[in-house]
Image (tube, rainbow, N blue to C red; front, side, top):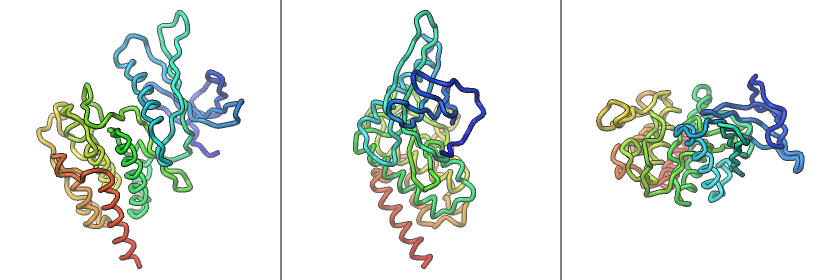
Length: 283
């Protein structure tokens, strides 16, 4: 096991699971590699501690519960499985603990592959991610927060989409603006109903960042900008990007959602064309 080690002091056990390593940190959370004695299995365990009654903290519980609910409806090898969520509040405490048990993935965040990874390899990863997102959409959900930190790649090249906390039913708006600046679709900033095309935009912004190192300017009331704009083509910023791929991404990033690819299945087909073009040119 070669999971990245973080020198954070950790407990020996968390609710019956033996802690082997601290492997990451998130918003008000710590993630550990744990061992279940009864089954002999390894898991990733996310532990969240928050103060009761604080709206911001309560959102962590809502997102954790949402991850489990959505995960149970999905069945795709490139989407990390979430097995359970447990809310624990010891008697007399004013803090609540949430424990989320997840599939253990020994991988590197996609964002760390910005440099030193070929465009061809990035395209291979993009295609797997696109298929996983298409599966989510087929099951009635958008991921709604696709970005380079939410994809893990193992040493064997396996790809996992993670963090389903902001996944949302297709056709419904969120209660408030949610997403990550630089990757959010314009309709997310306007708190409008989300669709497959919302994921198309998020995915396009992810590809754009991975190929250029630049974020797409986010439009909306919090950004101080007016309407969204299509950024400079990726192939104009990176000579290794084929013009066809730059065009594909440009369609993903159309401010008007009806100008984008219809869904992630259409994006997969377009990626296949670019991959075939690149492989043909290499022969």
